[in-house]
Length: 178
Image 1: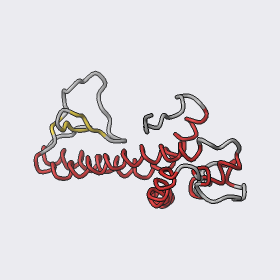
Image 2 (image 1 turned 180 degrees about the vertical axis):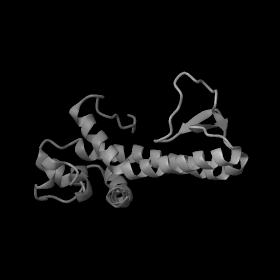
Image 3 (image 1 turned 90 degrees about the horizontal axis):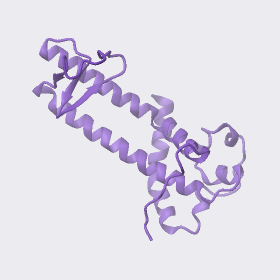
Image 4 (image 1 turned 90 degrees about the vertical axis):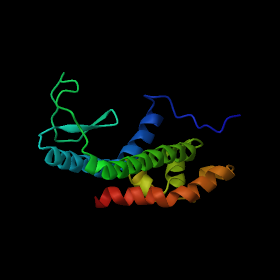
């Protein structure tokens, strides 16, 4: 038997709920990463003396919100990243990979938490407060059981929740602050 967690079918309300949690949790991080690329675009344009909407880095094109690309331009006008900015770009890539990894694992934990739930009260009880508050139907329900109670029979799942709860709370707080 595989330990791979299968996500709900795309388009199902269950899948949509998990996606909503992830979008809401990671909104600040996505903004931060977009700003990082925007800063690199501006620095690259200044270093190269051009006005480009993005840059190429190892064959991948990067752009950010607020920068307009010309439709159908292909690679025309797409400058390579200036060598002096490589360290900053490497930091950005590592940061983006960390966020993507965290998003994937937190999605799996939310899936595990919600899997056994049959009612809104079950969902409210098993989810940490920072997640339950994101869903209007759960927000005003009182907690009856402990956080993660749906994992009582899943020792590994409980350990994962204990390990990842601080990160979930961090991302939930970051979205409110940034």
